[in-house]
Length: 467
Image 1: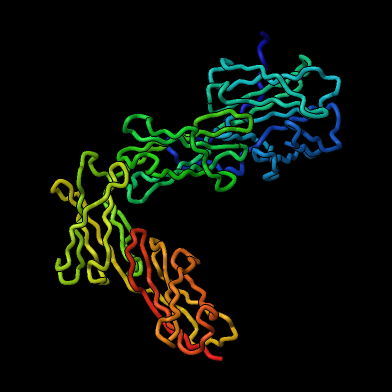
Image 2 (image 1 turned 135 degrees about the vertical axis):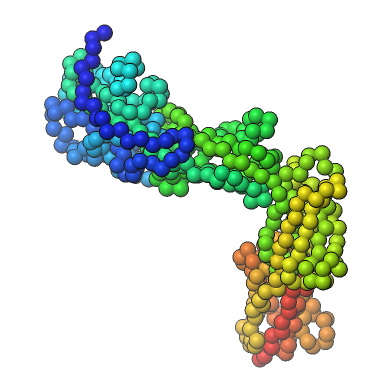
């Protein structure tokens, strides 16, 4: 094989760290999306349209600018974006590949080849890439990093048309990504997030396979979870502990990017140390009726877990030894019902024991801050009025609004469930016809219910209805 003549080599290599997730060396805006070489045999006067499987994929303008179209799996257009091609050509390692275009190629040309190699170790990785004719006078080759050992640094490409050298180019492939994840997390938080910034805009998909050190990869989710695209260059995943058996210890996440051709490559990885312990909210309202305290990372052999709880007021005069319920592997729950503590407000204290040994503790503050809104006076001609209660904790599953008129006692009482209008607000509509269109005082009491059927009165009000 004849020796390829070397093209120009750019020597300014900007370093960044792939696996450690350090800050990227260049803003991604400086990175190219492709390389456009003009053979100069003819002059491109019109836009070249490139189709893939019957869909418009790329427009190459006479000024070398490029519009690229992205579709969902159903073929619906998601967006149209402008590509970048400017020297020096810089490509992110996350891109997995880049395209080299040769335009203004004579129509009589039968074959275009793009031999490519990396500057490292001379031409040991030389690949003669056959060009693909994608439009009138336009040929394309895709340089895949995997064919060159995934190397970073300088990539050199020469171009031959029907065996004749017609040009060459070189590009720099370098890291641009930054991985963000906590060093430690608590099972009490429910999940943690891993994100990667500085991903090439040409990447079609980023996957985040995650598993725990315990029992190797028995909890690896397949297929690998696709990340959520936050913006053009940032992808993110949420790692919920429930999908990993609430295990403690090291959680591993590797990150892989895919280009539009399906080429895959490693982007980086992270390790998060997950710890057990007690958890729950730190403040709630009496209208929540009850409150759950969780203990994570409990010995799988534990048969009983207790959650003795009392209020700070008057020490342990109201202590209750609550027997916990196992809700998942290593996760136990104790439910504190406020009525069993005289519905006091203030600080509630919980210690957690298994097999006679204290393994954790938790404290939370209980307030009484709900607000009820209703008109003081309303006319019968308005047909109804609304009652709204706000500040109700999200654990409440139902709020009932028993309503009756002052006339003839509770002969017309109606127990009506409210409508949740926000995570902490409920509303009920009181129509007058249900109460015989009576005038005078309408009385409403309000009761909140938790998921276990416990309930308590949380408010009340009166409305004067006139003619």
